[in-house]
Length: 111
Length: 118
Image (cartoon, rainbow over all chains, first blue to last red; front, side, top):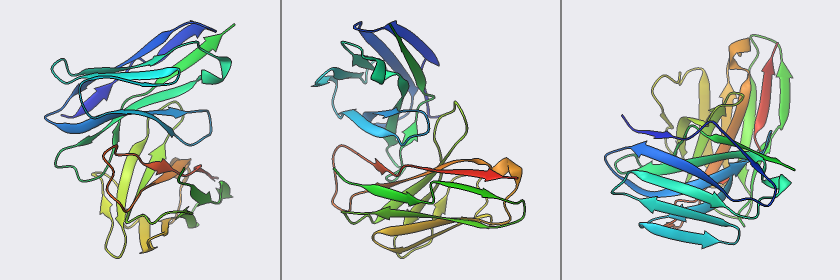
């Protein structure tokens, strides 16, 4: 099947660095996206990896390795407002334009 | 950035009634809109893909007669939950993909609709 697995919860302190992993089993996809969702809110786009390697956008970076079926989102200089759920997502080849979301990781940032 | 609105944001209804949720792309044209359902502490589950001017494509296990989708224009899609029951209570979120092809696969999400069926 086609699935994207993430750790369910991650806890870190303010100012720290945290990495949220996304492992997948799929026959092919176009790229790996990351979304942030605060409680009761809409998912917002954070980052996209179309190719292997690291993409950096401010405090957030994302990495993809197709050979390892693995990607991650890296959050630096954590702030309390980063407490949210984070989802990886892919558009599978042959799946049209629809996104399939990972299981989601709830990040708790503590003082 | 692109903006997607949803209305209503919250709705409470009695069991057996129908509820219509609107999703609008405010500053761009969206040939494709997507409807998701999200239960507490869970991921977004795609219900259906809505294509302007054609029938929606439903995911496996989603009843098309219960969740009616209409995509009448390039900026509006509606989801009607017919004969709602308590188990339909959930957070319903729409998203839209810009008409112009994008290599980033970015979808813009609406703020969601919290449906509670009594």
